[in-house]
Structures are given as C-alpha cells and as structure tokens.
Length: 210
Image (cartoon, rainbow, N blue to C red):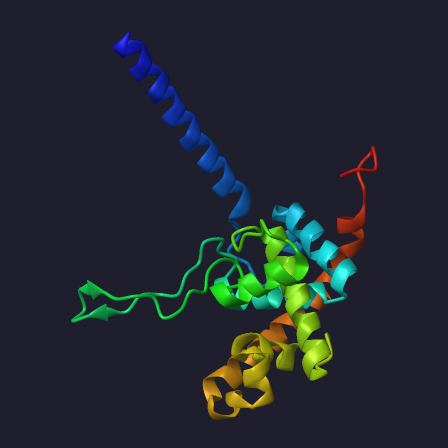
C-alpha cells in the first residue's frame, strides 16, 4: 500500500515539473535578437496578439510596448532587481518590489488591478503586462498630457512615476536621460521592422482563427 502511494506521489511530482517546464518554455523568449520585432513575433506569435490587443484597446503603439519591456527586463518573465551584498557575501533586500516583464512595483500593480478590475493579473503574464503598459501610458497621457507616441517622455514618466515626471526628477539623472533616448531609438526601430512583417502577422489561418 505504501509503495503504491509513493508511486502515485512520484508521478504527481513528475507531472507538476513537466507542467512548470512547459509554462516557462511558452513564456520565455529564446532569440538573442530582442531588438528585432519581426523575429520576436516570429518566435512568439501570441506575444504579437497581446501587443495588438493592447494597442486596439489603449491605442498605445506596439513599438513602445516592446521598447519598455526590452529595457525593463530584456523579455525575461521573472526578472527582479539585483540584490546587493553586505561585505560581498551577505544578501540584502532587493532595492524595490519591481517584478516581471515590465518591472512593475507592488503599489503600481495594485493600482492597475484595482483601476481596471483585472484582479487576477500577473506581472509574469505577457498579456497582462502589455495591457498594463497600455493602461499606464494612457494614464500618463491623461494626467500629464504626454502623447502616446512620445516614447521619450512616456518612458521617463514610466520610470519616475507621473508625480516624478511632473516634478522633473529626471533632470538630475543624466543616466536616465540616456536610457530614455535609447528606449526611444529602440521603439523607432521596432516600428520600422513591424512595417515589414505586420501584414504577415495579421494574416489569419485557414479557418480564420489563428
């Protein structure tokens, strides 16, 4: 009887491990060319559907969504800020609660879930993250008047928060200004690339559902 229980338990553990591996495999991008939107979406067609869905809902450019995610996590699903170490060996707390594809902090994520009603949203879910970016950029547009196509200022507001952007906290951060310029350039390149493959990405399968 005990052997039978142990065997069932072993099979259950193996099944759970397989499921977890499949989830990670479906969520992690394998390409090293994360600066090419066509290659990204060729490997992850569901990611294109997510960014397109967010665009249709919030009118936030797909290229801006990709540029923010690339800068924040390099498309890593479970990304977290690096820990600092005391004396080089003792791990300290992480510098913030930022987590996931878009490195969203706990308070901001709670705000998003409360404001949109998306109670089960996860920062490790690409579809939820693209919706979040659309929502946040739209908030910055409404609160601060920043155009949804102004990647440079939208990223500064994303990083500093709407209050920080209004106070121009980024003015004293030369490194952040350079990062915002980089994000803006990446968005422009993503947009140029998308023009070359967007028709193919929008093409439906034989039953019109793919």
